[in-house]
Structures are given as C-alpha cells and as structure tokens.
Length: 227
Image (spheres, rainbow, N blue to C red):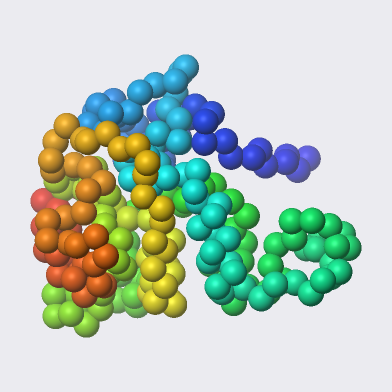
C-alpha cells in the first residue's frame, strides 16, 4: 500500500531524532545545540520554524516568495489553458511549464526541500566539484574553486555546515540561492557557534571573498575533529 506523504508543517513539533537528522548530528547533541541557539521545545519536540530562524538565520515564511522568484527567473511559464502536471486543464496555481534547472523543477515547497535535505559538511562537497577531498582542499586554497556566497552554519568550532541546495545551484549554475534573512534571531550563547557569517565577510560577499574568509576556518574545523 502506497502511503500519501504528509504535508510539511513548520509549526508542527519534530522529535530529537528528526532534528538531529536535519542538522547532521547525533541526537545526543540536541540539548546542547538547543541551548546554544536558544531553541525552545513546543510540546514534546522542536518547531522547524524556530530551527530555520535561529539556526539557519533565514525566514521560513518568506521562502515561498523566494521560490517564486527563482522559478520566474529560470522556468518557462505554461501556456494559457495548458494542462497541469496532473493533466487537469487550466486549473489555478499551475507550476511553471518547463524549468531549465532540474534542482528547482521538482520543488513545490522550498521549506520542505531545505528541511529534507538537511545540512552537510564542507568535505561532502568534494564529489560535487569532481575532486577527492584532499584535492578539493588544495584547489580551494589556491582559489581554483569557490564556495557559494552563503555563510556556513556553525554548530560548533569544529563543525561548519552548509545547505546542499546552496552548493548545487552554485557549482552547477553559478546561482546564489540568497534566502531571506530571519526576522527573529536569538544570538547563540557561544560566539564560536551560530548562523552569523565568519569575520571579514560583508553582507553581500562575492564568492571569492566568501571562499577566502570561510575556507581557512572551515578546513581548520574539519581537521579539528568530527565535531
């Protein structure tokens, strides 16, 4: 029996296990991370709304607008009266007819996609760039590859995380995701952990500036331990 996938609700609480899976950490670290980022339990779990705002430093309520902007820029609208994806003629709210970017084509809800993709570490990017991890590090140091203009999410001094969609759009299409900033952010208790950009990164950093400012600390974090 095929079960229908439930719609993602940013206000519905998720368990320690689901939050840990999203953040890319062991569930035993959740209490510590919740304390550092000022997350508060709602019922028996954690709200993705708060995680997006306080850990990602983005505003989840504006993600649908950002997705619309991206799809308008990189997708060709369906012709008037054309069938929708499910074959229903001319129904309202049709998705764009053709999307030139496969990374955007299947996204119906950006918050759901970002949550499901979770966070990954810098060493996970090597294959996307087409290199082994050691080669990837060397090429970053020499400026032959650049990270996307998005600040890392610092879960600790030894664990800097990134959103996969930021990486995929940048490495494959040189598109900056540029997600809307959070309207409510609680400063982390430790300056070493939090969503704020690394020192020296301007608000509108170029990819080169982002790489220069972020890479040294990110690589040092990778060498410092598993985090």
